[in-house]
Amino acid sequence: MKGIILYGFAEGVFMEECQDRRPVVFISGAGVKKEIPDELEKFCHVVQWTGKEPISSQDMKNGIRNADILVLAFHSRLDREEVQEAARLKLVIQNFAGYERVDVQACTEFGIPFCNAASPSGSTVAEMALTLILASRRQLLSYVDAMRAGQWVHSPNNTWDEGHNLAGYTAGILGMGHIGSVLASFLQCLGMHVIYHNRHPLPAGREQGCRWVSSKRLYQESDVLINVLPASSSTKGIIDIGVFRQMKKNALFVNVGRGDTVVTEDLVTALREGHIAQAALDVCDPEPLPAVHPLRSMKQVLLTPHIASSTEETRAAKEIQLIQNVKNVLTGEKLIDCVNQEAIQEFHFKKLKKI
Image 1 (cartoon, helix red, strand yellow):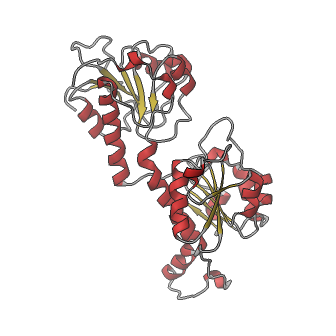
Image 2: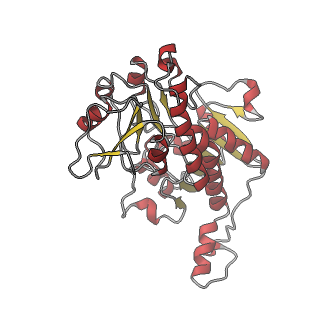
């Protein structure tokens, strides 16, 4: 990558002061697609950490001390003590949605906008949730396994449980944000009744035929319960054995939110004891799931390795949005997917350099 300093690569030493006057972008890991630093280098000075392990706190401090913009790589953390070292930082940005590793409050207190990539991921994650629901309700994997084994059966495992429709049943969405709203529209098109639970009901104009219910009613009434909650101190372990015991015994539990919102041991117990019938999980706790784990061997469980937002189209859209946000902060334009709007002040949008 011509013109890009690979900080932490071989014997490279971070250059404390850049020789040109372009804004400095620090990329905190090697996991960022090559197209991003290549594009940023056209109008910024790019420094990238390329160590094999996730960047340490000290290396993060060194990297952002003279940076104007921080691009967070996956698995990087940004805590208060690092933010305090970032006297010049004007923007923290990442090209994925979840931000449990970022101290957003500290960014806000120091007047640093933080942007994620929630918008490009919304419909893609909703599509994956729908895929998991359809595959589970129709017992698709059991039929696929039978065909691969040379069998031709109309009932998986000879149970004569041929699967179930979606139309006429109730889907419950826990966490009705952007992803949940898109998913709700998909499910309604297939004839499902959609209920949801947030801390507060959505404005009437945004419910689009969905109905807010208490969390208790959500668990009790859902034939398919979809968790779209983000990771936070208030959601950690919120779905436990108490929740599963309230659900219908023939219910399907789907998780496309975050793994640590569910107590994994309780989910295993609920499946073994028949409190729920099925689970379909794109996320789990821990990640990666150990090679030997009860969930991997349960026939009523469908697992995917946290790939709900992983498509070529969504990756490209995230890259475009990240580049655009960097340009926007340099030219005073509105930021896309800014999590902490209160951090945006007039002085943050003074041009660092005309592009």
